[in-house]
Length: 91
Image (cartoon, rainbow, N blue to C red):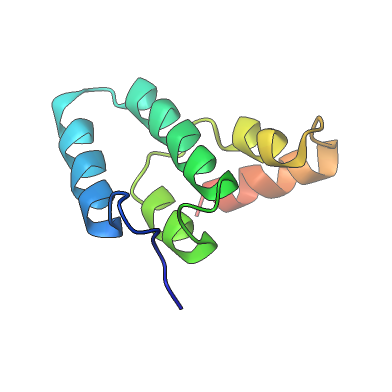
């Protein structure tokens, strides 16, 4: 199974770009938010597969996670779902 669409950046290229940009900024929150949005778009448009998205997302600080879940779900988080995200972010 192909994980990247031909002509687009590879997982390794994206990984290097994310790591480089995170190293340039402290705190890296703004960078993390930008990359979360960019990766979400790549996933939404089927340019990367879910497994690639998950591996790259792990490189990012845990900021904007709730908002990203809302973006994918296109709805406000329930209190229960918000609590689940809080618990998983503490791990």
